[in-house]
Image (tube, rainbow over all chains, first blue to last red; front, top):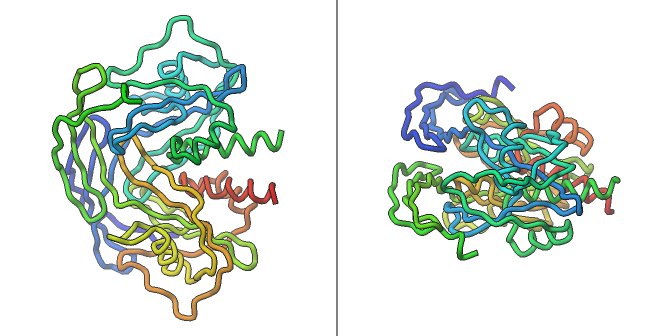
Length: 182
Length: 182
């Protein structure tokens, strides 16, 4: 694999934001020529497949400004500085859905857009959910609706493009496979 | 869903790049307060699940500068201006793997990082592959190794984190489900 490596010749910070940073790097390609790479740095995120005692999947609907529309997604959120992914997963589940869980297991992690960003999403499965008596607070700039859907409904929502993001499509497929092998 | 909408108050272009553009927008939240959103604009991309006559999955290994490492991924690439996704899928398959296909079907499309980017990936399945006599040219700054792997090998590569991205993990799960229902 060493013959594929791109060496960094220079790195320029273009933007430091609340959520993401942007760098443009000049690289030396494997053939000795040079090119530039546009790189978004992201703190990483978690997403949670959460199954209620009634065997429903918890989903949240929220407005996604980059898309100019709402999406229905599994609960998810960014890692806070120094926070371990399992703590983020539990926090986001509690904040976004009003449920907590007894069992939380890591399933898989994946990069979402390796061509231009380093965002890594850690996917968890939460079981044995319990409703919180006092709901946790959402972030100040976060507004969402919680939904509880069956697996069949979730599959339908993929067809109608209400579910329209990679992590949630993966989660629905995961649950289809799980159901089939149980 | 209207009660979740964020209105754009202003939009500032921070960066216009070769691949991505970056904007910072001031928005009015559903409660009337204001916040900012950092938004990466991306031309969109395709990814192709391509199955050889020997029932192997075509994968490409390439260096991903944002991650500082190589990943094994299904063939994929950005939409050129004005290009339809199915044309991109066929082009990328030919350029990256040296195969073309008789059958190309759209499977699903999904946003990869709806929190900060508008990248939409169109996933296709390519069957009845044929080796090109004259390989198509890769982009000037693109270097990769082609691999042909079984479904079992692909599942193993997820465990060892050689496969470590959302679209490829989705593709492997899709093929597991497909195998099971056939």
